[in-house]
Image 1: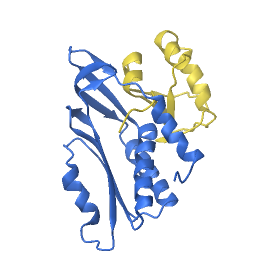
Image 2: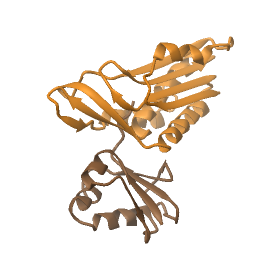
Image 3: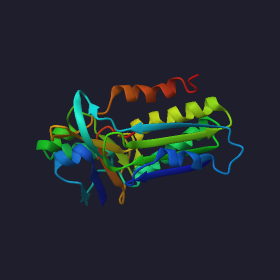
Length: 158
Length: 82
């Protein structure tokens, strides 16, 4: 399984990254991707911007462990995970997960697994700026924990 | 000596990003207790109702994890990436 994992301050361009996963690999027949975007509202308030903090060193390790676990559960040919840090604005891509597999079911499940685990285990924290000029930390969601927990209760989730 | 790092809202509430502890407890749970014992905001954070996650040497661990000289401990709120 080829893997590429990046945490970057530079803008993330999903349409430039996705073909990199299958370029030159004619045996790859199916690619699934997830793009997480910054929205202009949260918890009932208009949001004008966001800053993404992370734990340097641990972030890369945590992402690598999540991707490795996906590779153990399913047969994946390639995985690419790119996550932004720093300042973001509405509609900016925050995260990209791309998974290639010979079996499309495994690619779909692998992709969903990776984003579900990333949202509960990768050390990033969002601080958002609301339209009125205030600033607050985004709260973790129970629904994200539930989604991650479900992977241990229904390992193959089909 | 261990290094302790504080992230996100914890860093803001406690007023520091990191510190070195020369005489350190030998487990993560004992470390939490000693930090809570500083009182004030430290007690609010480490003995409060809101979860404080911990990593030792950049891996998430359970509270009974032992601490050794040279370890790096990170404390942080539930994560919100993705």
